[in-house]
Length: 236
Ligand code: TMP
Ligand code: ASP
Image 1 (tube, rainbow, N blue to C red):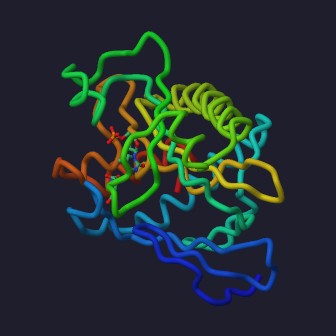
Image 2 (spheres, helix red, strand yellow; image 1 turned 135 degrees about the vertical axis):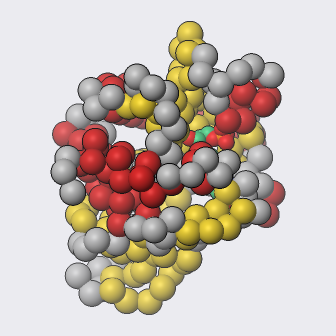
């Protein structure tokens, strides 16, 4: 598959066109940002790991009947994906209290929620991705009622399948962010699923094995990403 012109450069990935109008190539960078770009840095080989972990998880989800934009891994840092129109709603699913939920509710990190919480954020960097609800989604035409219902249902199904898969690998899925896109009228899971977009804690020690190590300067960032890659994909 030929890589053609650059369509878009985001904080962690570059999207390229291909010779097929229905397919894009995603290039995974090592660049890391946090707090809406206020903190900038890079994590060695993060792009390689996030590509590999995302590919593995999208394949696993496809086997469980959850379709995504993923087609195939092309190289260390490149993924071939269906060209979707990204829905401007980021979906966060939470199983344990952490991060912004801990701040918002004044509760300490690590408490298990009685059931999963689904949150929506308006995907707009200039506005710092504000939290919104289903009414905002509908009134501002970010998605139709039918679409957002499919998004919510799919996100909860991903949560179940992914939580089980990771738990078997001694990882707690604390919370994570998903993005969706429309492909020829179908709502597909899109973007990436990796230690940048998930909070992943060791099941026994509760050690953080995700981007929080970068966000909060906890050290051993590369080691944590490698450990997740080992557990999710097997030996490197
Ligand atoms: P939060 O606790 O900061 O709201 O984050 C919830 C989850 O969403 C966490 O797993 C990290 C992920 N996330 C992203 O992938 N991108 C973002 O821009 C933000 C704010 C969170
Ligand atoms: N807010 C994202 C994060 O902390 C990154 C960013 O927006 O710069 O994961």
